[in-house]
Length: 239
Image (cartoon, rainbow, N blue to C red; front, side, top):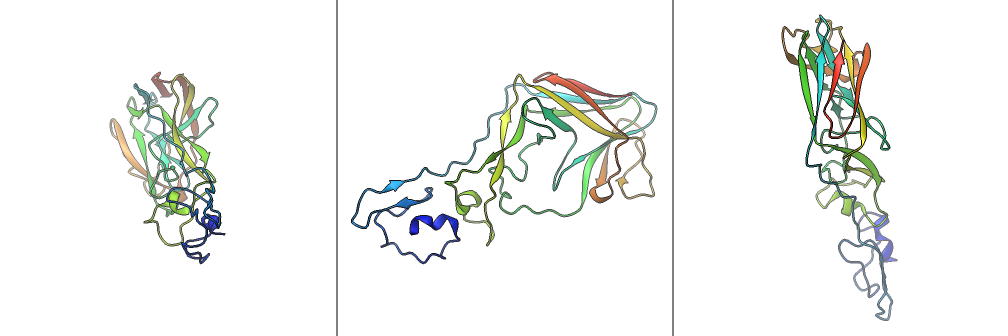
């Protein structure tokens, strides 16, 4: 029964090299061997989902404050990470990761050991008339199932912490060339300097970095969106 070794941690089955002439090799999950030296049947190798290359041309998303007061662009906070904007792509879904490999990326070193703690996330304060630009390489990260042929060590690697186990799904990068998209900024004009929800309320001019604490993050007063077709540049206007 050594061919089932992928479902239990190494060493629990107690098999030795002499059991079955067709023992599995590195990168394969499960090989059945005949006791008399038959050829056996080999399953497919573990092949994790591949990231697609970014399009040759990226897009720029501009957020512009056309009001007479400072506006705070709140980060879009997920379970352990944040992004500046909420991004949706036609046919792929809403609120998709787009700012580089997420922690649950198929080749992320933290895929099998995801953990995070409460903390602050970066946002932007925009003074009246100011704007900021968010570059985008034209990829989003979508979920794919991890193939059944992949065992824990195939996914997590030999240096993963003891007890690490592979998830059932991970994210891979896919190009959105020629696809429609919508980006949304989460906006508030309220910032209390005596409150710890937003740090650095002052923004006398231009674009100023702020920190937003996830457990105390204010509810946005409104959400402002812009749409386009990649690689079209778009402008989110706060007015």
